[in-house]
Length: 129
Image (cartoon, rainbow, N blue to C red):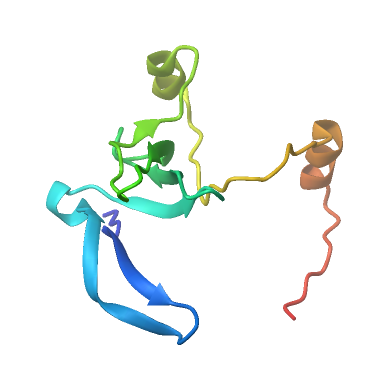
């Protein structure tokens, strides 16, 4: 039996100068009440957008959703990452998105080199500092 944890999205005030938190928690997205979940919400660098993943579409695969934030801190209803034909794309896709993030500049990738390295048996040792 598969089981997923359901997480609400909340906000709480934080004072970086004193390192203290506020005493009021606002629930921005009540996932528990909806029986849905969202994970890894990431704000844009200017704080105007939120990028998150959710299984709300089919309950199986995590898809990317965007929401905007108004000047009063209210979020719009999250919408799925646009595609040319979303019903066809998401209906046939086996991709599951995880841990999204915004970038400040364009990311250039040599896809041939990336595929070659991923498919290679050679591994690079990584260490935690």
